[in-house]
Image (cartoon, protein in one colour):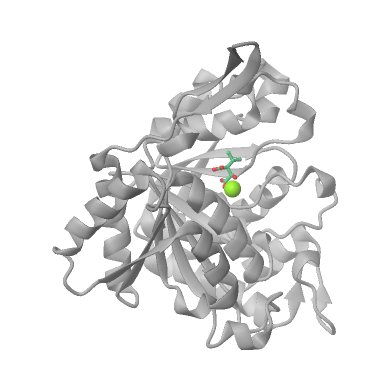
Length: 354
Ligand code: IPM
Ligand code: MG
């Protein structure tokens, strides 16, 4: 099969993790007889430096004209003085919105061989959580205003959801729950927010059509606590944009490192947007010490969800597992008596297992 992939390396450690992800794709292409063509595009800080704009038109056109997009990471304090609507993060939000990838899947799994910062008794029989985060609406896309009212500074951010926006992402979560344990947890703040009340109403209504899914509800503050106290009891979390952003960083800490977590963002079609959930980590950029596994796992998700390449995806995931089982570690997940490797070495070793 032949696929065109838009590649956005981005800022900080973005190019380093991307190089490993492309190595993996090249190996998959060779092994399974596919052809992947890469279209390199700029977004974020790198785009500001080159063109003045965080999201050039050409990039936007390319993400809508290729089979899927891979993104390393964007942002960094270098661009802190950019106006709000030209910050590197705006590029990310702009791409997600243009692609209408409303369902962001963020699996968070603890490998048995790795250490979690949680005590073993809290981990119980393991951590395997799937966060389904709404990605193209809510407060991140509402009107943001900063101004003066009655001689004092005032700011507002609007959080808005429509019934349809909730339905389409909930459908994805219900279907995932059916394939997993059959448990779906809607996380909201329905004791305070009107948007959350609507989420509950819509999800409650939909649950009648998913007889084999058991839906439960939890306030987001409580969920933040349960992720630490009872993570093994949580399976599929469905939640709105901002809560999903926050909870997925928390969940990635309990699986040992945010560097381990990949993600997949999908809309109505097969075209997807794939990025690790970590940021650009400017403090360690260029040192070849970051963890490429999040990006590589995102590639596996692209192969499976956008290209229907099931066995190819399996082979990448198995290679990552073997890397861990054979005792290789990047700095962030290093343990006693294990073999520390650079980011680029990790990419080579994982490729050799495909
Ligand atoms: C993420 C990031 C982004 C988000 C930022 C960089 C805009 O934190 O992908 O989780 O909030 O979605
Ligand atoms: Mg985040």
